[in-house]
Amino acid sequence: MYKETRIFYPNKLKTLALLSISTIFVVGGFSLIDKEPIIGWLTISFFSLGIIVSIVQFIPNSTYLKLNHEGFEVKGLFKSNFTKWIHVKDLREGSINGNKMIFFDYTEQHRKWKKGKKLSKFLSGKEGAVQSSYNIKTKVLLQLMIDYKKDSESQFIDS
Image (cartoon, rainbow, N blue to C red; front, side):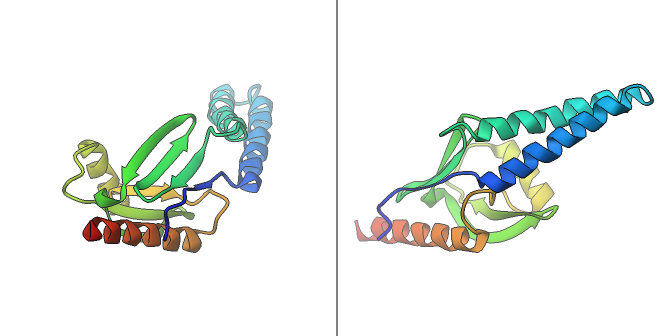
């Protein structure tokens, strides 16, 4: 049923909002330099990163979420990670500081990122997460991921 690959790109409005807010803070940082140089330069430095990340997200294929029958690939800032459905268990919706995400734990067969999984589990209660900053609603994305995973499991059992 879910044999076709689906690709979701960053939500352009959210990316534009990040770019705008970051730019406002950078301008504000420059106005602080005379009175509070350390705070001004820290503000400029931090929010300049937000500008860079925003601009990169507008570059085609620099950032996306790809779902297929084998698993999902998350690509951000030109770096990608692929996770097989057989390594994922209990997908659920959640949030960190108001940012909606799809959380999950890895199965015992997944051997990568041992320290990262422990840290993530400590911070969020789950070992892995997929941001919900793509051009699809979080609940719809969660259901789609669950459906791909179920379809993958049924193909594995049938073979």
